[in-house]
Length: 114
Length: 114
Length: 143
Length: 143
Ligand SMILES: Nc1ncnc2c1ncn2[C@@H]1O[C@H](COP(=O)(O)OP(=O)(O)O)[C@@H](O)[C@H]1O
Ligand SMILES: Nc1ncnc2c1ncn2[C@@H]1O[C@H](COP(=O)(O)OP(=O)(O)O)[C@@H](O)[C@H]1O
Image (cartoon, rainbow over all chains, first blue to last red; front, top):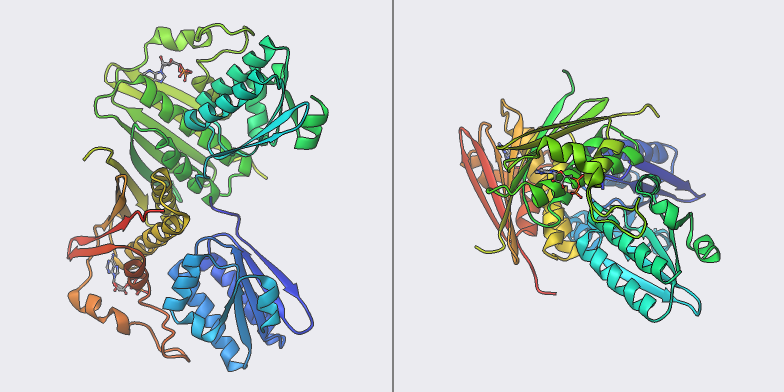
């Protein structure tokens, strides 16, 4: 089912976790990019994106994730993902995203490895 | 999404809880009826049906629930439902099911009120 | 009308295919921010209508055609089969259907149309010996 | 073929309508007990193909037509638009699309067809100046 779109942010001193809910298309992707850019502007460059509640990501959503990776690379930041399905992980590897961002099974290990 | 069909039974001394997962159509309904009839044959006539993981029930599923109510009435048993959505509860009231079976918000209260 | 979208779906009369129609309806309703309850009601009405077409129409092509029309404030669904149709007598007598049960008000049949009428805002049944079209509308309730 | 079922769906080119197609595909795949991963892959391939039709076809009727054919061991999906078509040059050059990023192997475009080809078992693209049909098959893997 089309889950309600939603973005949650959990900010700590050194890092922030952004959790998405629902289909990661251009609409949700833009919301996500905005939140991420705001965090990066504020100097928070250690980010975790938790995709556990996002079952479907389209290629526009992927482009937006790549833009976040680029913004973080410019600031020498780090991005880790968690909560990926097997197919999402496979797609991220195929798209070379996995070369520039970490992939972890859960939020704890994603944070620990920032 | 079409959840995997599934039936779980939790049996206690005095009662049993049957929990369904997925679309309650004729296929899942028949499985449910079989389990319920087996319990009733064994003398367990205090039943709870937990529909929390069943989001959609069609009218054939409802017929089968009515058959279980009838079987329990013959044995002077009791049936309580829990885990209904607002729409399911409304439908059960409309179908007079609520007159012959209890409707409770959660499994605990459904068991307590058997 | 602006912002009106039409979706057409043809499914075979086969168990569980009604779910494809129900899910399509739910995607459209969620797209327009119908609330959770309305989304569930729409799915149930679609399921019952498709099951009726499969069970009763005796259609030779064994197909159910569904047209969805969604605007910002309503979803219209039109479900057609090319079967034998429903007679006026049957429609009038719906309330009396079904073999008696222990509890006389617990009827085993004749429940589909009752559910559809209770859950949807407008229900129209058009039927001829060439088939049946059941149309219903669900209006979006302001949050 | 026995136990073959055909489902037809027409959706408008409008944001998120691809989900109606994806969900229909998922219902059919789950009906035939495709595993969870396959169901997700099918949905992604459908989404990408529908988005491509919306983004690139320049079709005047702004419709995407989807035909699903499901048997016990495979799901075939055929997605058609009546747009301008894809040239062979574009198809050959897909890998080079997209403006460069900081990381040259992180491309922003040209990802849809790559995803479809990676996730599906057979992909055929037929295109003419009258439109494009992308067909793909997902085979059921034994559990
Ligand atoms: N598409 C249809 N084609 C022919 N007859 C139909 C159709 N839909 C409904 N009917 C008739 O209307 C009656 C009432 O339908 P319904 O209220 O859903 O109850 P039920 O399906 O349990 O009989 C059916 O028994 C059938 O005779
Ligand atoms: N249905 C279509 N009609 C016309 N052109 C298409 C269609 N689908 C794909 N294309 C062309 O193929 C190219 C590659 O598509 P794709 O791999 O999905 O990447 P992207 O959509 O990111 O450009 C597109 O840029 C477009 O030129």
